[in-house]
Amino acid sequence: MFDLIKMEEKRQAETICLIPSENHTSKAVREAVGSVLANKYAEGYPGKRYYQGNEVIDRIENLAIERCKKLFNLVHANVQPYSGSPANMAVIFGLLEPRDTVCGMELSAGGHLTHGHPQVTFSGKYFNSVQYGVGKDGEIDYDEIKQIVAKAKPKVIFAGTTAYPFLLEWKKFAEAAESVGAYLVADISHIAGLIVGGQHESPAEFAHIITSTTHKILRGPRGAFVGVTKRGVEKDADLPKKIDRAVFPGIQGGPHENTIAGMAVAFGEAESDEYREYIKKVIENAKVLAETLRVEGLRVFGTENHLMLIDVGKENGKEMAVRLERVGMVVNVNTIPFDEGSAFRPSGLRIGTPAVTTRGMGKDQMRQIGVWIAQVIKNTGDIEVITKQVKELCKTYPIPE
Image 1 (cartoon, rainbow, N blue to C red):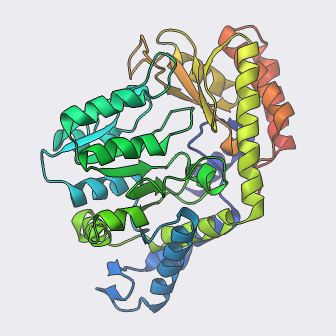
Image 2 (cartoon, one colour; image 1 turned 180 degrees about the vertical axis):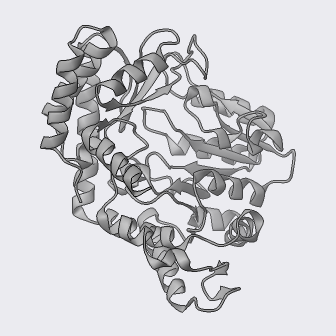
């Protein structure tokens, strides 16, 4: 097992991670997650546990809660969800009855499975789902959302994406939700760091609930939180209780307190000026990379944030992702707007800059990476030479401790 871990450590060190939902955590986060906190059961909440021996654990979880509330302007935060999907599940189970209507973005347009994808997940199997998409330019049509909401009258509306390279307009989502009295849930899993870093408007003023993972651009462990805003409490004073009961005992048992400690560390790191500077560079790098790919002749959707979608030809996504991995550049396949392929054979790639920026790479490196990507996709470069150059770049910009 430890040999395998070393192998994975080597793979990460010698390859360029361009998956926008992946990043490199600090040593402090990893130490918290790998600590003796993994030994402790702590069912319940601080001050109300079903196990003894949780005096220190309570302080740890409370620290994570307070830091989370401060970062995202929340009046209540639950940091126990194991990941993003359970966080969204808790919201849906806490606020809806079976067959109630939930509204979210189509998976093929850049949404998430838990936002009501029909029949595949709990959100589509046990609840009535209506979905909105994007226009030919890849951007959300907010007028379409208003029409869908007016007709379906959902009780919960999800505003959040996994592969959307544009800024989200929270006010327009709030207007749609307000028109039918729905709860507005902002799932900021992919842009939480941008919000903390001041590069994307916060949904706290407009949404009733905020959910998010804590890895990805936030550079924490693989956990999540559900937060209630001031607007949420004004709509429903019992909202914090509904969320907490839905998480435990609704869908989870003992919280992973080692992960919660890692989240507290990451929240603390995100409060720093260094982190805000990092976020600025993430955005700068994404724009340079996108422009380079366009100059190299590729069709690019975006970018206004940290990621972009690239059209690599009908159903060619997987082939190109494998080809790029062979030279040491790791991306993931993704559908593009109005994809002529399918979810299993998409025509695009999703690329982002959080991980490479964590390694200290800048605009010059983005230009070089963009050229390499184009050469591999168009089959115009020497694969052996590119592979060697990628490894050299990784040596120059090692993964920081």
